[in-house]
Image 1 (cartoon, rainbow, N blue to C red):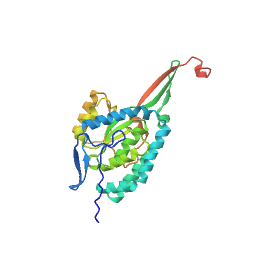
Image 2: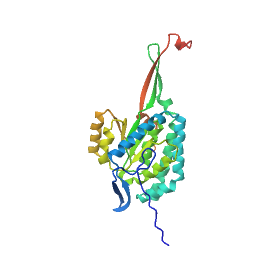
Image 3: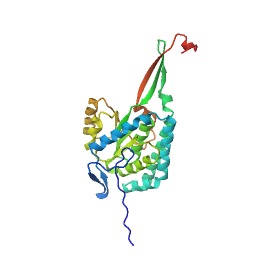
Image 4: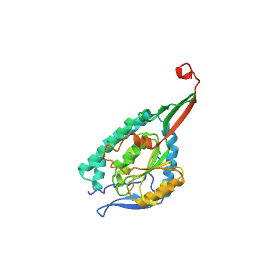
Length: 292
């Protein structure tokens, strides 16, 4: 007896759940003019819902210990390792060769482990005790910016997405990512990994759709603190610069070759941090250790 295949439904990932787009729209994801699947076409309302979820999750996530964030990133890598064959299969469906698909999944897993290791170390590298001439102790430390929005790299299905999400959440931020338009299936499957790996709801939100429609909302929303752009389209980038300047949003252009191990490091975490400097008065004898 012939059995009908149960086809996977690709939705959005917002606030730890998998809702359909509120607009009810979709776009066909194709390979060589053959329809692979229908993907949700996110709207402005979907993005606003994602920002609200990310803002709500930020307070708890930013206060987690660095060690706990490290454990959670490692858990994401652990689950991704266990589902490796599924991701390789999806990448091959998107046109990857078997070797290229395996390489991208392996590099994505390694990148998560890499940033898991940096969670409790970047503060040691970037914090400082500053020399001052007055009777004060002056200390600078890094703090997460808050809600980070990102336009993921169109050239990769998984590695570019992971290379944005990992340094963002490793530093205590929450994020909303618009996945690659033509390679979006892996992004939603990665969201399933996030949903089952101890990441609190709202810390990572993943949308599918077109940057042509959504980039204005990403750059103009007043509750987004920073924007990562992995895009080479000059018109869109110019519009992002102009709209982000109106609300003093920080914009970072990360159009990188993510397969290169040089394109990873604590400075990607630092980009999404704010430096907080504290002044603490001490008496004249304090520096000699008598009292503070």
